[in-house]
Amino acid sequence: MIEPTYVTRPFLPPLEELQPYLERIWANRLLTNKGPFHEEFEQALCDYLGVEHISLFANGTLALVTALQAMRITGDVITTPYSFVATAHSLLWNGIRPVFVDIDPETLNLDPDKIEAAITPQTTAILPVHVYGRPCDTARIQSIADIYGLRVIYDAAHAFGVEDAGGSILRHGDVSILSFHATKVFTTFEGGAVVSPDAKMKKRIDYLKNFGFADEVTVVAPGINGKMNEFQAALGLLQLKHFDAALKQRAELDRYYRETLADIPGIRCLPLPDCSRRNYAYCLIMVEPEYPLSRDELYTRLRQNNIFARRYFYPLISSFPMYRALPSANKSNLPVASASADKVLCLPIYPGLEPDRLEKVTNLIRSVIES
Image 1 (cartoon, rainbow, N blue to C red):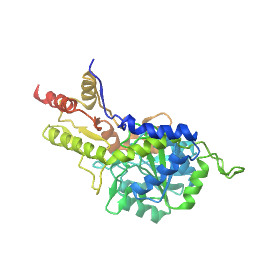
Image 2: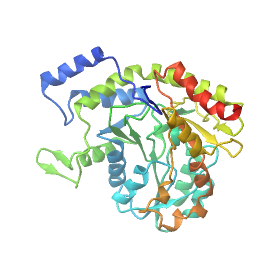
Image 3: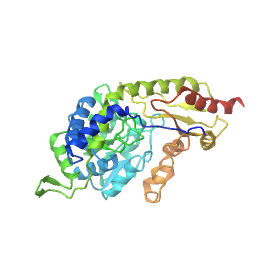
Image 4: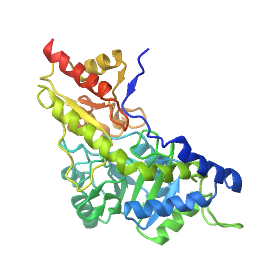
């Protein structure tokens, strides 16, 4: 049987590199609660990403839920329907109402032109997403937030290592949230982090992720258990050593797709994001009407050939039962997001993707035109 080809596959360092880390964990018996690898990993991330304050979490969703809690966000928050459900779920978990705004057709990020019209007296914050690791228009979003006195929380789950002209994309907004899930460009199996603007916010977030404990006998807030364990942190330290090499491979794969698919009518690659450092977290195509198959028909054909592309993001968050009754979730309010969700297809891209499998993907897409 031919092994399936998925959209992503986690890069794992050689087992012999992992062994010394495991031996240290076994020897010191410190498995969690800010062990030595946890502390080392936090500092290593700050150094690599060029930020000052990071709080590690067991996963990105807990990081986002906790960040909203730490900032005491209430009322309505403007966000995108074009994301993974955790973005909006984190609002509901905090008793916040999502207000969906349409996206830009070229970046697929929250459209700044649509934000201002959605602001009401109940609006307290904006929650944009750097979709596929493509930076939002941070300057315009911040300008709107400043005018109306709103907080900005960036869901940067896809944006590890991305930089604009001023440095890390994670420095924008009041906080940024990362995910280290196994499907991400940088992984600790599960995992996540909050990038804070100052030591005061980091301290509050660190209290909240550990049940609210300030010390052994003092609880200062109704926190949760969001801590990252030592095994995750050790894997993260190892991943960091190989990340630049992995990024280089991803860039080469992305270039191959763009060059090979460029002349196929009805298959459109989005322009590369305008930033000084990209992470090539996803390789997506838009299946336009000129192509002989619909997006779903192409998706099915690829699956029939053991290529498991992904319709990411489909359906829109706003279409799910817990959201679709919201006035902002009406499809007429979200024409670009609705159209994009019906066109997008993410293709396999990960370090170690064999040339013959890569060729198989592009040949199958081309064969529809040539048949």
